[in-house]
Amino acid sequence: MNLELNGKNVIITGGSKGIGRSIALAFADEGANVAICARGAEALARTKAEVAARGVKCFAQSCDVGDASSLAAFLDAANTSLGGVDVLVNNPSGFGVSDDEAGWKVGFDVDMMAAVRATQRVTPWIAARGGGAIIHISSISGMEGTTRAIPYAAMKAAMISHSKSMALTLAPKNIRVNCVSPGSVEFPGGLWEARKLANDPGYEAVRNGIPFKRLGRPEEIAAVVVFLASSQASWLTGANIPVDGGQHPGNL
Image (tube, rainbow, N blue to C red; front, side, top):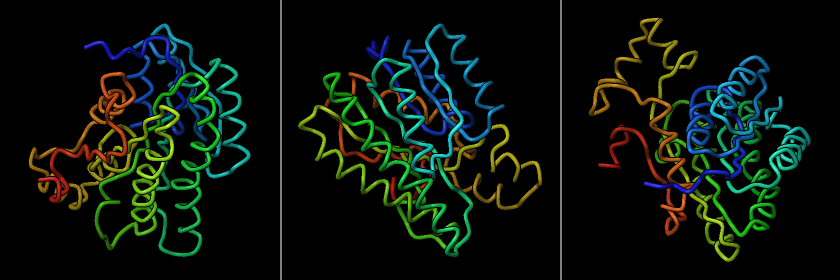
């Protein structure tokens, strides 16, 4: 299957580790040029080197996506470095924030407003190239009620709603907007790996609750994101696609 992504330019916010890193590598494997950002310079440099080793252009810049000016500076620099934008992936998350005023602000700024601001800023650039795709990374937590990480779940639900509204708004510009909602995903240095290494019974409870009896892998999320950005998904917009191995019961 030819995804026709060779030579396309992709911006990924939050692209140095975990799902974001896998998304960046997956696009690079298809021949797309990539721009990534993150707060941690060391992980960002490692991922930049991995992407560049695929023979594509990679722009990387430290950025706090929860800060409007920092995010705008990264996006502007990425657009200049790549020479235009075809695809935007809104990936970062304030997962684990507390259910208090400060926690809600982190969730609002890092999850919701980072996606809103990036979409607003990048849309004209994508439109100038004849259209393209925007993909939000939400979560199955945004598809149901929860008693834990309430700000996180609420912001992820808002991202799903925002993607659907933007799909309608941007269709006249030939820009498709979709959402991917991962379930629990395990990767080196991530939350779930830490819980497994700590013998946290919650890890086994989650694992056993998934029909395949394992957690997801970041490359499994990345594969869906790359497909949604490709010409093979040309008639797909406004969708929220759970990628969770059947973890969310409403998907079955």
